[in-house]
Length: 127
Image 1 (cartoon, rainbow, N blue to C red):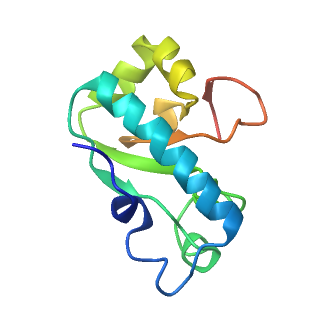
Image 2: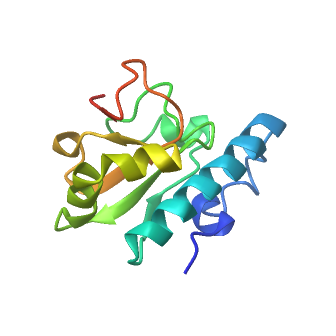
């Protein structure tokens, strides 16, 4: 089952409408995530998608310039670490999909995927 626009937006676009850049980013993110999900072959549950700045500011540990604010990132539940492990074992798939992974050591219980190239340029990056 595809990851939907509604799952990523989490209803937040009603109070905090997307601008043209965010909308374009969202379309690119959904394309990348759904290609990845197809290759992964298992359900993926969104835990954090679009985060308007006011919401992001209240998320403990969130980066001040989080890719979530620009619709370029999404977090998925990963209680047992199996999604992170799949990503780490298949970096070529992340590359094919145009995705970057926040290092699993920094995301216990969830998996962070984004389309925005991190400052390091590494496929797997540390915040």
